[in-house]
Amino acid sequence: MVQSTTMGKLHNDVEFTPITVDRGGWSHKLDFLFSCISLSVGLGNVWRFPYLCYKNGGGAFLVTYTVAMFLCGIPLFFQEVAIGQYLRVGGSTFVGKLCPLFQGVGYATMTMVFFLDLYYCVIIAWALFYLLSALWFPELPWSSCGNWWNTNSCYEHGGNTTVVDGIIKHRTPIEEFWEQRVLRQSNGITEVGGMQWELLGCLLCGWIIVYSVIYRGLHQSGKVIWFTALFPYVVLFILLVRSVTLDGASDGLWYYVIPRWEELAAPGPWIDGATQIFFAYSIGTGALPALGSYNSFNHNCYKDAVITCIVNTLTSLLAGVCTFAILGNIALEQNTTVADVVNSGPGLVFLTYPEAVLKLPGATIWAVIFFLMLIILGVDSEFCLVESFVTGMVDKWPKTLLPHRRKFTFAVCLVLFVLGIPMVTHGGIYIFQLMDYYSASGMCLLWVCFFQTIAISWFFGADKVTEFIEEMMDMKASRFWYICWVYISPAVMMAIFIFNVLEYVPATYGSYSYPTWAQNVGIAISLSSMLWIPGYALYYLCTTPGTLQQRIKTGLTSKANIRHNATTPTTSPKLLPVSESSAVLM
Image (cartoon, rainbow, N blue to C red):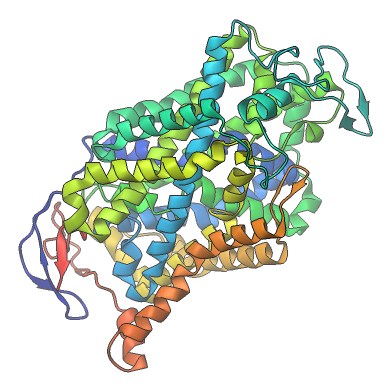
């Protein structure tokens, strides 16, 4: 890594003096690739993708998902990683470096990632609870009624299930284990109830695992990332072989791949397809530039970006095959349709797969393997997102935080653990659903991604991004990327955002409708990230000296220097600050 002490000038004649501070880097060139895979491949591939696919017409959803992948997903993924690699900064700083007026994008990103970190570890706690239950009991505790948590409505449907008007009249042991044992669920968000102490312990264990991985910095945990990125595929392939051989699997697979073409005329599949791309690829979270910032200057991030996006999509498709094959088997045994088997909401994976493993030989072993996979999928995404937040904060206040990075990381994990405690109370599931629906929902993510793309591609200039790429990798970006960055991706995101507004539906949890005050709290959570962008722009225009025209010009003028020299050496540019952790803007 180059540690320059040479003074230079930026395009707007602002001088800076880099400081020789070592940011760190990957110990192996493949560590970055596996980090991106472990970040983007997570729980969303196992339960969110199959649910959205079934909801929006099976194969028709695959069409919209593929279109969004090529027109928005891959181009924006590549753009974020390349800029992070060039500027050596995390999520909270890189947009403001390119276009100071849009520094609010970074603050919005950090706010959104903070909320995501807050409730994502709760999913890990649920999976830990199931894993420990499978190991503790001689038989899986959700396999039968008669336990102390079961009610009189519990029904073991080992044979035919009574169905009236498509509605199952009895509650399965799996449903009761989830609601009565794991969550000890209350009747609503107004009934928080007591603490679920066992779940609190699982939440604490989850945060201990996350912190133990990242306390030295993510780039020093490369070999851990290799394992967390590869192990889920071993489990998925094993489940694939078993699931496709189950009775009724073909019914589920046909439902999965046959398009309902009429669904393409509605906005739903397009909204869900594109939202899933942003969610799955971690676009707009600040994690991608943070990971890219640890690359060597001449690393071929283009190849890694394309590989990661393809692997992510193939993982979703693979998980879809496993899921729909299992759902087809369950539908056959319950004498119902595949559409009626799937339960929506955050508990989907904990209601469907536990029922599936009961039908596999050695059910306990399968349960342990599956929930261990869920934990790994959750942990590898969680520690990447926490690292994104920590890196962004350190890059923003380097003199204060960089010397105490370990302590700051511990403090962040501790605060997130404490703030997550309400979600492991008896009414915690309602709080969790509200957070999931509003804090990092499609609307927030689309808002941030739209303004980020506008700031980079329109005001900073997509042509300059192509110069980044040429300088780092000695290659020119295809005209396709330029067209996507400037025209197609912003247009698609704006259309999707408008669809979200027009099709807005308040949050619900199953049949439970939240009170008005809770919906207002959720909207406030969304606005807490979205308002950073216009709010900071207004603040910048009010506090920057000069006329309004001069303020706007200054706000749209980059603070980063791009050298127009194609014969760049294989080291980092001498006149470009390594990061805000290693440069002071004068």
